[in-house]
Amino acid sequence: MNLNEYIKQADSIVSNHCMRYRALFPQCGVLLSGGIDSSVITSYVLEHFKETLILSMGTDLSKDKPFVDIVTTHFKTSYEWVYLSEKEIYESLPIVKKLLDENEIEATEMQQSLAVGYYLIFKRAQSKGIKGIVTGQGPDILFAGYHKYKGMSGEALADEIKKDLILLETDKKRDSAMARHFGITLLNPYLEQDFVDFSLTVPVELKLTNGVEKYFMRKWGEKRGLPQEIVNRPKKAFQYSTGLQKKVHKQLE
Image 1: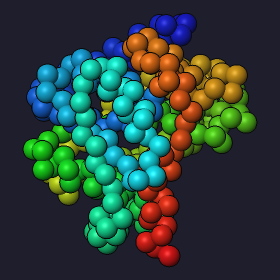
Image 2: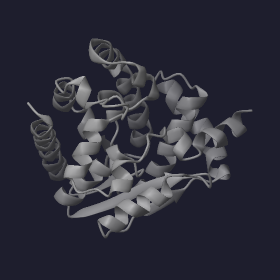
Image 3: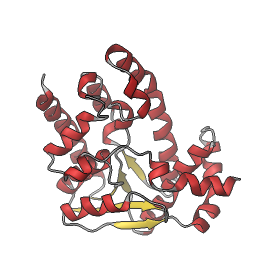
Image 4: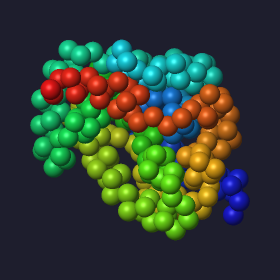
């Protein structure tokens, strides 16, 4: 298959899951960071759901907000910005750590940084009556988004991606634990088994091309009509783009 045929297959899988989610949660939320993964998913949610609450978050150090503005302006829609204050982070960390411990997730600084952001955004979603939230979790591993993949190619890259799939299970467990605390169900199209299986059939040269990580996702985003600023946005880890890692590090010192 060529690139366009793979994109058509991805489109079919994600569309089918969105239709299934809509039957369960006619009104849903979607997490948007302004990165390529969450922007592609947001385009599907807006297409398939009549009532959608776009949720974005960040501290005063956030680098995401300008990109979220670009995506929502493009789709002519509004969004809910969840400002993560130092006070809220400080007050939430003990609860977050307890939830991580209960779910047998090591409460490292990175895991706490990731979890506290989700905890606070799900808290806001609950106040808005949202019961189901769609996320863009997954392609950083499935489509070679992390910096460590850049020095790899061919079978070595394919093997490393397969080895890292276990990390997606930890991500799903962590995020779902924060969501369940507020009675929310997470909906993860990229983490559905058929999508994971599909992603492993995509040739690695369509994942990492000429040093461009997540090449497949970027071309898919182009097909979805996303702005070039989003398609070409460099990968930046969530805990850094939101400013959460610095804030949590300060609290844990």
